[in-house]
Structures are given as structure tokens and as C-alpha cells.
Length: 219
Ligand SMILES: Nc1ncnc2c1ncn2[C@@H]1O[C@H](COP(=O)(O)OP(=O)(O)OP(=O)(O)O)[C@@H](O)[C@H]1O
Ligand SMILES: [Mg+2]
Image (cartoon, rainbow, N blue to C red):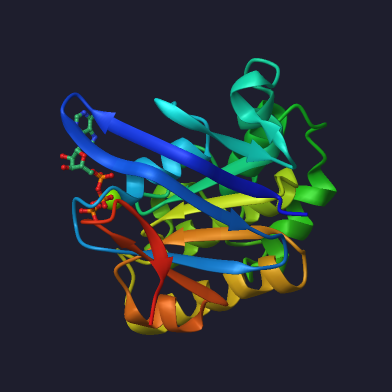
């Protein structure tokens, strides 16, 4: 069974049609790269998958269930974690407190041991995770964002240009962590990217064809 599916999704902003009858399935344990021209609608598609935007036609199914018909906020709170280029962490809180806060928002007990384990797993030691996020490097911040996804246990991880601000070596580290999330932790990892390195290291790369307004397997 697919963990996440877009079924015949059509979406437009006013008169700008981005998707027309777009269908695609995602499995857990896989790392997907979504690629396509700037402005083609990749970020919008992540917003649809995450339940932040609503398709005008068609549906997003989570484990076969239409997310629009799930309990208000439940899908967003419990099933999905977002990772952004800009990290979206609270700069004046420590890395550990950021993870603990995310756990509470996800309706989980703010379990310090679990948060610390997640931070250690992404390679942040006890000195680093105690620091305020504003004092961390970009690569370290992105690791905190990944630790947050791990600690929150959501099965779907949606990332938008997560290596956009990072150098090549740091990107490699982040790519390996995405592979681990998918292959070891059995998450469904969906990453929008312009980076060839990221898409080459994904299990499946799909290309958003602007003229077709749907995804096709990238060659
Ligand atoms: N809230 C909005 N209202 C109206 N138009 C929007 C809105 N958000 C995005 N758009 C338009 O929809 C199109 C797709 O935007 P989107 O951000 O999804 O593209 P993208 O593929 O992520 O591009 P990039 O690779 O540059 O990040 C763009 O033309 C954009 O201007
Ligand atoms: Mg975008």
C-alpha cells in the first residue's frame, strides 16, 4: 500500500494552472526527489501533500484516506514534518529545546532522552545541541531540522530545497541523513531540489513537466 498518493489533482492559483489531473504514489522506505523548472509548482505540490493547500480537484490520500476528510489538523500534526531551506527553527532556543518544542506540537511527550538520541543520531554532540540555534552553522541547523523530524516520528518527511544554502560536503552529509531516514527508519522522504547531487542520490527522481502539468519519471 502507498503511504501517500496524489489522485487526479488539479490546482491553480487564480488563472495560473499548475496541475491538471496529476497522479503520483509514494511508498514508505523510499527517498524521492522532485525536480523541475523554477516556477513549475514544486513548492506548491509539497504544500498540497502536506495539507497546507487544498486541491481544487482530486485528493491527497494518506494510507488510503483523503487528508481533507481527516480530523482537523491531525494529519499536519501527527503524520508530516517539513524541512525547509531556511531551517525554520527558533533561533533563540537551543537545538534541544527546538526538538522538544516540535515534539509537544506534534502531540508527543517532550521526552528529553528521545530528543537527545535524535540529535546524536544526526551527528550533533552534547556541546552543540545545547547551543542556541542562532550560533549554529547552516549544516548544523539543517541537522537539527532532521533530528526534529526523527523525534516527531512522522512517517512523511517533506523537504523543500534542504541543501539550498549548504556547501557540497555539507550537502553530502544531509543527503546521507535523508537516505538513512528512508532506508533505516522507513520514512517516506520527499525532497524538492534543484541539486543534481540530491536527485542522483534519491531512490526515485520525478520531474514536474510544466506543459503536462504532472510528474513523470526523470530520465
Ligand atoms: N500564493 C500564491 N498565489 C499566487 N501565485 C502563487 C502563489 N504561490 C506560488 N505562486 C505561483 O505559482 C507558481 C509556482 O510556484 P512554486 O513556488 O510552487 O514553484 P517552484 O517550482 O517551487 O519554483 P522554485 O523552483 O523557484 O522554488 C509560480 O508562478 C508562483 O509565482
Ligand atoms: Mg520552490
